[in-house]
Length: 126
Image 1 (cartoon, rainbow, N blue to C red):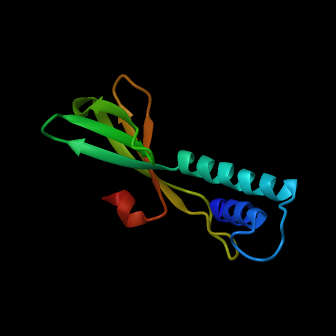
Image 2 (cartoon, rainbow, N blue to C red):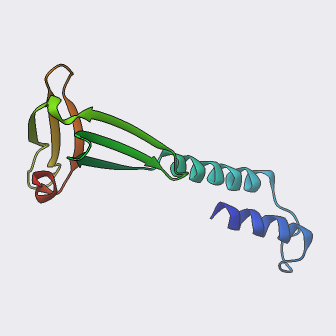
């Protein structure tokens, strides 16, 4: 959307795009650049999290992948896992429904880690 606004401002200023306004005001350019920066921040903040249980390697891995394909991998040894628990969090009332589920891994020598947060009960139980 920001690129569309910049496109119309720049080509409208040159008179190439349409016979209309000949000048773009400074605040129009500012809003278009601000929208472009905000869009890039949202793209940078978006992440996909995957949890991988590997019996072959005897590890549990939590992989975070960003839009630009950078990966952050956290691995734990499968023999260190003592307990896997699912917690039901939030509240359910007439107007408010904030129920969600968290899967927590407990380790022998490490602190507990939340590996999954979801609103789907069946997904948390698998």
